[in-house]
Amino acid sequence: MKVEPVVLSNDFVRLEPLLPTHREPLRVVAADPELWRFHAQNHHGATFDAWFDLSLRLLDTGEGICFVVIDAASGEIAGSSSYLAVVPAHKRLEIGSTWYPKPFQGGSTNPATKLALMSHAFEALAFNRVEFKLDSRNAQSWAAMRKLGATQEGIFRRHLVLPDGYKRDSVYFSVIAEEWPSVKAGIAARLSSFKG
Image 1 (cartoon, one colour):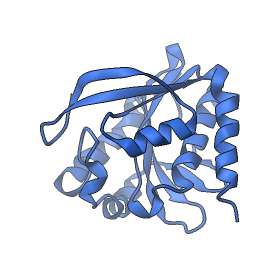
Image 2 (image 1 turned 30 degrees about the horizontal axis):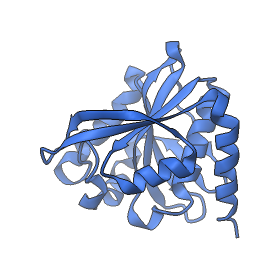
Image 3 (image 1 turned 90 degrees about the horizontal axis):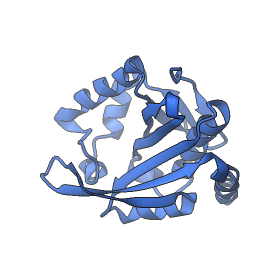
C-alpha cells in the first residue's frame, strides 16, 4: 500500500501535496536562515532547490509526502510539513520536516496542521503510530509536542550531524492509535481558543 497524495484541510489550514508550482512561493517563505537552526538540512538559499527536488521525489519513492501549509484565513503559504518514513506494513509514519515562518509560529498553524495530518493517518489510513523527532535544544518544539499530547519516548544521542557540524541529539515522541481520540480532543480544544 502506498500513501496517496490528498489535500487535507480544516478551519485553519489547507495542506496541499507539493507540486512544482510551489517552488518559487515556498522559496520566498523559506528564506529566513533562522528557520533552519535545528534542522538536519538547510532549506534556504543555495540548498533550497535540492530540498525541494528531494521533497518532490518522496512521493515517487513512496517514502512520504511533503505538504505545503496554507493559512485558511489569508490564503498565504504558512510553511510546510511532511509525512516521512512511511512504513505501511507496520502502519506507522513520521510527521516531520515541519517549518513555519515567524508570522505563523505560536498560533493555530502548528496544532491545526498536526490535527489534519494525524486525522488522516489514524482515521483514513488506519495507521497505528505517528512519530515525531526534534533537536533536543529546540525548546519551542518540546513545548509544542507537550501541548500536542505526544508521549516522549527517548533520546537518540548524537543522532544527526547538522550543516554547521553540531552533533544533534534527537528526542522522539509519538502518538498511537489508542491515544488518538484523547489527543484529538485536546487539539480541538486548543484550536477553539483561536476561533473568533
